[in-house]
Image 1 (spheres, rainbow, N blue to C red):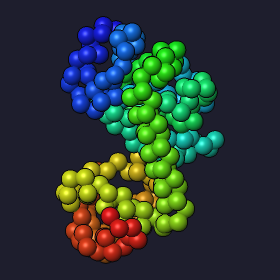
Image 2: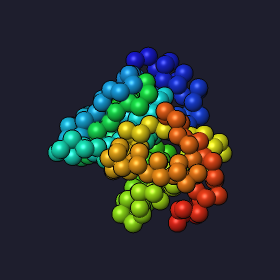
Image 3: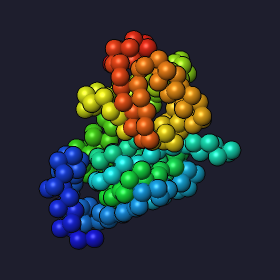
Amino acid sequence: MSILKVVEVIEKEKTIYNILKSCPYEILKQWEIFKYKKGKMFLKQGEIYPYFFIIIEGEANIFIMSHNGKRYSQSIYTKGNFIGELEIFNNIPFSCSIEAITDIKLLALKREYFLKWYDMDKNISRYITEQMSFAFYTLSQKSAEDTLYTLRERICNYLLEEYSKSFKTNIKIDKDTLAAQLAVTKRSLNRTFMEFRKEGILEISNSQVFINDLNKLKNLTKKNI
């Protein structure tokens, strides 16, 4: 790939600039751009991939697939998130599968160049360490929440977190993705939403949730959001 395309991405996106600002020229020349359509599972749990990835456009669902086909969503990744940083050092199989929620574009760097970059660039070695620490912290919180909170409370937490991003009471949801994220069946999810609707807390239409009583929703959760 032409280095000019990489420079174009860096200049266009501040998030990507902060990651690549100290990347040596010899490494910048080695980046590739991968594109995948919405719904494509482009990385599979248990497979080894000799690449480090950075999302530059779109969203991806990071999930674990059980032997019976049930999905457990670990996180939703967006622009600036890394993929493969845990596995690439020891060239081990991916612990999760990755599926494009939207059309997605990624920067990709082969393992041999990634390891050189990591040794040469103090900025990226520190940045990756910070991102790993944050990812472990977030995963630990999610694990505790999945264990200690009821489904009602977890849905409340999710809706309040989404509300805090824009302070809009209409929230777009994907029930399949949310069910996987909460590790529950879609039927259980629908049943809980119907309970909230009967209580006058929210309305739901297609892929939209409309919060009618924000204070009541806050009172149902044990988290201070």
